[in-house]
Image (cartoon, rainbow, N blue to C red; front, top):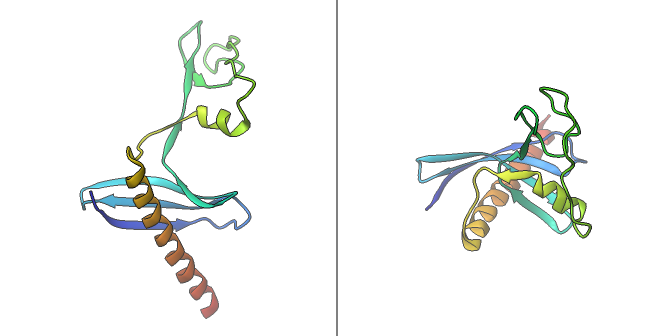
Length: 134
């Protein structure tokens, strides 16, 4: 599978961890949107698009976001989701989200990350060149 296009959408706030969103086209036939470029403690990395995990209300069955205290449909109290003491905040946040699409092999993840971060770097250079013109 070949990446045929990478579009980068820079975020305005430079002090935040989220630096940009990417849209990646594969083989001119398949698109994945909302890949995040994030500044981590060891440098930039990508995060795949994800959705929040939901839990059903035991009374009415309405699906509420994990860790909600009350049902948004019937206002019944929801059971607390158990959390292991050794889990840190990052692991807890990760458990609340599930990837919509993601690479299966480490080699493809590295290829995807390299292409997205290279495009991000190019977009940053282009953006800073435009700022200097004004």
